[in-house]
Image 1 (cartoon, rainbow, N blue to C red):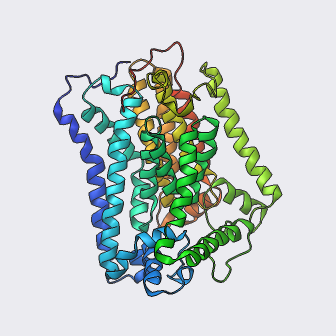
Image 2 (image 1 turned 60 degrees about the horizontal axis):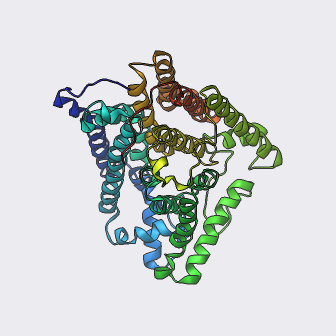
Image 3 (image 1 turned 30 degrees about the vertical axis):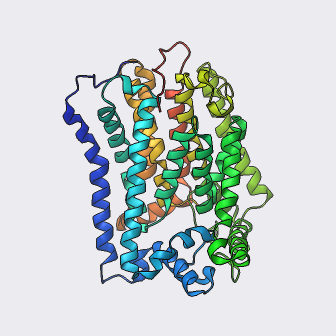
Amino acid sequence: MSTPPPKSSPRWFALFWLVPFGLIAWWSINTIGQVHNPKYDAGDRFRDFLEFYSGSEALVKGTPLYEAGKLGYIYPPLLAVLLMPLAHLPIASAALVWLAIKSAALLASIWLGARDMTRRFGLDRTGPLLIISGIVAAIGAAILADKVRAEYRMQQSNAILLLCWTLALIWLDRRPGLAGIALGFAVTIKYVALIALPYLLIRRRFKAAASLVLSTIAFNLAPAIILGWNENLAGLSRALGGIGNMLSGAGQQAGEAKIMGMENFGISVPSVVVRALGLPGLNITALLIIAVIAAAVFAAAWIIYSRAGQSMFQHAAADGTSPLAQANPTRHRMLALEWSGLIVAALAFSPQTNSPHLVQLVLVALALAAALLALAPTHPFHFKLAIASALVLLASLTLPPSGESTRTLVGLSRRIGWPAWTMLVSYLLLLAAAVPRPSAPAPPAHQP
């Protein structure tokens, strides 16, 4: 499949890499200014990092983990344990270290993800990998610019999850054990990555699935080395208790993770359903409505597969380690599309999705950018579908624009779950555009 730029492309095209690198540098400078702005209080200066830091500081001092911070530490103990060395620094210095960690994770995700998507869509045979992947990275970073900015402003941990998603995709075929470990670490930070487990089982990737389960258990038990067995188990119980309270609408309970209720927080489908029903949490009716919506999305994807002449389950070679599976270019593209679908589903159907979480869509945007380049020269109709997908995703992430004059409109869009519905539509358009057709020329084999 031919696509511009050709192999004779000028080397200055590699300057496209300056787009993601420049944006990350700009956001980092803004975050440094926020951290050192004396006009703000600690909550405004450090945002969610204040909760991470306070949790780590509580472990160092031996005080209750889930009573630390302003809003409260809500994750399993592992993240707080890993950040304990930062608790020995002043919080402003610790925030800069955290900024460096997040920036490194984001840069690695864009670098590795763009190169992987370039190969999966067969673009590496049309020009130098550095140049083509740079164009993919620039498009992907531009689409997600607003949400990456939100991630930096809130000083959240979603860049770490993005790196886990990226590494798992890259390792899934040749190193399924490492892919499972990357996902297990993600689950220990935020539970939504568990959505990968049923996918791996359906796709008969049993090594990756087993690795995910075992590594999740290991990562959750590892803090016992420092905290002690009883305290670590108590921390896990309090973290899960907070999840249970949030889902049931029971409210915050003393000593447990203080997770905000679904009715007041979140831009996902479950949050919208709970608000529409006037409930504090999930009940049978809400679960049935959510299940119907999820089934409708799945049915739409099934129809897209069928019309493209593909079977929903034909790419289920066990763990993808056979030589035949490794040489199947269609399968490599399908994995990129399905992995993007996992991320979209995790965000659209998680009960606690908010704006900074959407930075995990960077990998989806990179797949979309690669699809645009692959389809442009020879598939005008499907290229238009990919353009529509990009525009819908961009609208999902940037509209309505934030500002004093649009505050009411922004609030309404969040209450109706505008980002969730539009990201689902964008993904289905991407799927319709990029699912390989048997009659179409196949891209070259993926070479990890």
